[in-house]
Image 1 (cartoon, one colour):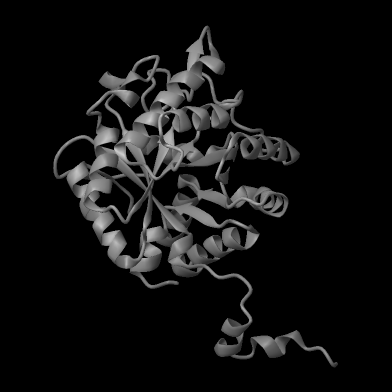
Image 2: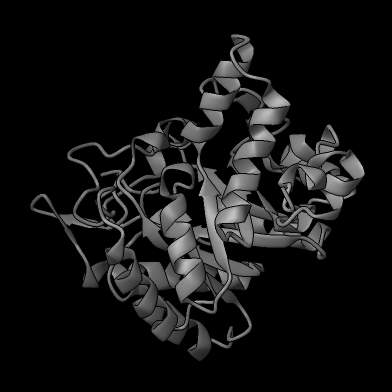
Length: 323
């Protein structure tokens, strides 16, 4: 046999030398949950090791992560039920929890990359990503609210704004509004292919943001569809997106690969709460080697073509020196 592929696997040095896919801290984004209060650090029961932080503790967590080499953070707010209404007015109220959190992180750590979530569901009394009228999520009326949210985030200091709502036309609408308000330098990371997935449960626990009625299938994508993601991606690129995101990651590696092959934009992938919880639960029961399983998951997402990976594993990977 002239060709023996095992020769390139015979030692750790050679295996590292020929490794095709590299994963570094620069590829990782850490989602963080913020909650009102002082000195609050409340663990999300369904996401072991992940916490809701009051702003003072959020700043401590960001500082710790920066020292580990983790520099990008995606913030999500846990909003008190009493502040929620049909039009998500708390999302743009001056002095709201989320806007204060963005501003405080950027003021204290200007070197950190702050990514913000644009969608109505954390603030909506209906729990949906858009305005609900007679049981229907209305699209165009929602865009105006999303645009106000995006501008408010930019004013607070956001580096990247990530619309997760899946309303039609929102990237172009937000890009135009941001540019008109003097924020042409603020990036848009579009949730391009966000599927109606069963893997979001722990995240909704963390934010108490589940829909009060119905589901999100009229705006989030059908898990059976792949080519539809090409339509969404083409529209987002034309409308001014700087990143295209696939969510969730693990069941949709084919979609990550498809967008990576077809579009000359960075591809982000969200290794979501349910995916994280599966690894944690299995490891705690002794069914998986946690380090190996975590790194295999992240490497698989990276190999599929993701430039940026939003993952709840980000801090522990660096803290434990798994990279």
